[in-house]
Amino acid sequence: SKHNSVMIIMKFGGTSVQNAEAIRRVIGIVRGRMAEKPLVVVSALSKVTRQLCSIAEAAQGRREDEFRELLSALRKRHCDLAAELLPEGSALLQDCLGRIGQLCDELEDFVYGVFRIAELSPRSYARIVSTGELLSSVIVSAAMNAAGLSCHWADARRMMVTDCNYMSAAPDLEATEANVRREYPALSKGASVILTQGFIASSVEGFPSVLGFEGSDYSAAIFGMALNASRVEIWTDVDGIRTADPRIVSDTGRIARLSYDEAAEMASLGARVLHPLTIEPARKRGIPVVVLNSANPEGQGSEVSFSGEGAGPKSIALNEEVEFLRITSPKTGGAAAMLADVYQVLASEGLKSGPETVSESSLNIVLEVGKTASDNAVRRLREKYEVQVLTDKALVSVVGRDVASSHEVLSALLRKSAPVHMLSASPSMLSVSVVVDKAVAKSIVSALHCEYFG
Ligand code: ADP
Ligand code: ASP
Ligand code: MG
Image (cartoon, rainbow, N blue to C red):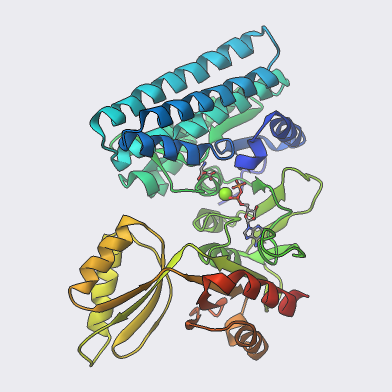
């Protein structure tokens, strides 16, 4: 179907809205895109989601002083920010402080409830963490109006519908698309900018849910799909998608263009610049995803679309948040039954698995760390199999079209990575990964970066 030729999505992450200076920059960037009728998606202010997690856990753990203190710091940070951005004595400031106050009062009541019963269900947890995006969006929306942008605040929970897996909810794309299209005409009427929240949603049961940490990118792509946007812009704190995480390697290069496949592969292997599910809705409608730096808006960024550039290494990804499992069957003779058992357990515990290798009687597999879920899975698997859990390992991957079939790529990878505990190529040949000791993973990433891009 045709692109909605005059509308784009602009998503701003936590660091892009972390303080008044950053928010003023955001307003300047959005002002420059007014002709493209932006729908703006914001995250919570930086670190707020994590603080809300600490608040929820302190309440459950009956640490009253701790959560009270965190709650009042949270309220103060948001009120101070509103006061800094909005004209003193204005109705906009009054109204904004009123909304912040109400959101914080409701949050405190709710957290106090968790404290009283000392129990934190995923549904209650999601209710608590969803407050971050409500707070940030109320402030950014008021600041835009104060700057003369005529901004309409929209509640993402009225549009984004998910299942009942509250803390890592899966959106119902069809229902969400229908809701977005139904709400959009009224939202865009008389407004030059629509502002909504990433990450937060409502379950089919009607309670607040969240898409999983870092999920605002995914929200932005879903809004883009629903509205046939001509572009989804992900504004963050780096100059586009790089040849490696700039926090690990100092001399990374910008990747000007990459394919949906390559970007999805990178994200699923741990490069946190995009949430792994972001590509899917964009690819569905062929909408380009552009990654840009809100601290350097003149920078060119990276464009993800059907057309990447040539084959060969594009980027190196590191994932340190993994568990490495070695599962052995006491019986030999066919891996099929063992694989069926393992995947049945992983799926029922809601665990995501990464690269793996299989033999007749054993399986090596990389799992995303999932606290109690992986403990449960391991306990269940040990009823039948011998399971070794290694937590001191990390996953290093080289990503790019056809890297897994390149002799040069593979030989450099093996020369620089030692000791290697597992080697695996993706069936698509888009990546090749090694499991190495966490202690040396960063230096391996640097050495590989030098080899491929130096
Ligand atoms: P936001 O809060 O805007 O969503 P994130 O912190 O989630 O920002 O994502 C941006 C971060 O992703 C960067 O600061 C960078 O450290 C990290 N990152 C990891 N791999 C890459 C990569 N290949 N290119 C760019 N950034 C990367
Ligand atoms: N605020 C949420 C988080 O920190 C969602 C996001 O920023 O993408 O995980
Ligand atoms: Mg992010």
